Every structure is written in structure tokens, then in C-alpha cells.
Length: 342
Image (cartoon, rainbow, N blue to C red):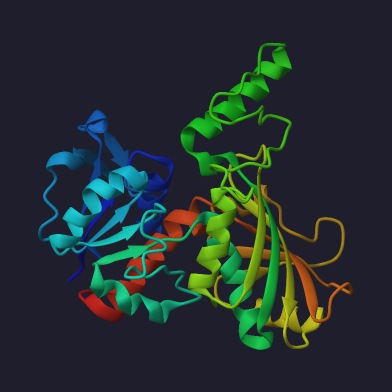
């Protein structure tokens, strides 16, 4: 006996990745449905590499009754319209948008970090998936926090254009091509040229000068990991198609050496430590694409503060930052609460 799963937003980058991962991980399915807006009704999407084609249904008239879980990847506005309807019908929503992340009645889950918090899903029958840049960071921070207790985190991100969806990827491709042939590289999706450039601006600006993306990293880390941790973030869009990178500086309450941190990270769930301190002995975004792990490199002590470390963190943002984390939440929910699969 398996689960009846709905992928909502199945024609987008994250929705397609959800289907790939469900197939790869052989998620115990009895049935699967794919839904999207009316524009995509009747289209077909691949169920991973199984050879199976799934026909897209219109979310407006899809009946969620009798379905166990719905993985949502349609953004906040669509989620606001449809998630409560699915949840009320008994179909647990695992939402990839930012809509419910800071709702006190909705658990915000990274399974390697705070699996126990999933018990709170019964209040709304909704579970939130964190921001992509937060997800990979807390996977790296959690085992170190357990050992030496983190006081403060300073993070600078190098976020790929796939975080802005297909339009972001198309713009990087088109601008790069146009520059090579001498055509205009006009910015449409982004605020400035992204090809051969970096943009220190993701999401809208807030009153204090930070951006909403930076705010998300602060408040989500506190909710997932520990409200006492101080976090400051600078989020930057870079001309990389897939894979987010982060430079993370951490100040601890207790003593921790780089060697101790490497040992801890080597054994931590969801982490792959590649830190050879030689040419090429680290991971870059190109190498993380299609992988499940959060990769850590460049672990070193920071002599400018007491009990400080710096490290480099890379992950496939469409996977751990979105689709993989959602599927892992579904696996956790099934294992701990629904218990339909053998």
C-alpha cells in the first residue's frame, strides 16, 4: 500500500524536479497526479526517467479529496488560493512558496535539522519548505551548533539564476549569446545585466536596506535552528544556471577547531565534505547539479573572533533547496504519521 500524491505546478522547474526525485527515490506511490494552471491543461510531463507520461490537470477544478499529500510549487499567490482547499480536504500540503514559512501554526522543516517539528502539521495540515539558500545553510550549521552552540552567522550568497525560475535562466542564456554577437543585453527579469555580472539584489528591498531574500535567511534560520542565533546575510545573484553557493562565517559560544568541524561535517546527515586544501579540492556549483548532498569545503578557523570558523557551502538549489527537501518532508511525514507504505 502506498500514497496518493499530487504535484502542483508540475510544469515549472521545481515541479519537474519533484517528479524526477519522486521517481529516483522510488517513493511508495499508489497514484500520482500532476496539476498546473489552465494554460498547461492537457500537456504531458515526464515522470522522471520511468518512461511514464503524466497528463496535466487544471488546478481550478481538481478535487483533492482522497489524496494523501500535495507538493506545491506554484508561488505564494496560487498557494494562497488553493492550499487551504487541499488541506481542508484532508490532503496534506507541502508548500515550496514563502507564504506559510513564518506562520506559527505551520512547521518549517528541513528533515536533517528539525524533523521533530513536523508533528505540528496537524494544526493546519500544511508544512512549509524553507527558502533555498536557508535550506542548505542550516544543513551545514545544525551539526556544528549541536557541538559548540552558534552565536552569530555572517553569510554571503552566490545564487544561481534558476532561483528566479525559467525566465531567469532564459535571460542569462540570451544575454550571454547577445553579448558574444554584439547585440543588446537588455535586462528584463533582473534589475541589471546578469551575464558576466553579479547583482547584489534578490527580491524586494525592505525599510532597513536589506532585501526580502536576506530577511528570509535570518528569520527562517531562527525558526528552524535556534531563535537565539544572530544572522546577517547579503544575497547576490550570479551568472550560474543551477547551484547556490554560500560563504559562511560562524561565531560559536564554545571552542571548536577546524579539524573538529571537519570530522563533525564528514559524519553529518545530508552533508558531503570535500575539503582537500589543494587545487580543485573543493566543490563548485557546476559539480553539485543533480546531486542530493549539501557540499562543504574550505573549512578554516577565523582568528579575528573567539571560536570562529569560515566555510564554503554549495548545493543544487532546485534539489535540496526546493524539490528534494519537499520529497524528504513527504517521506518523513509518511514514516512518522501517515504510515501507509510497508
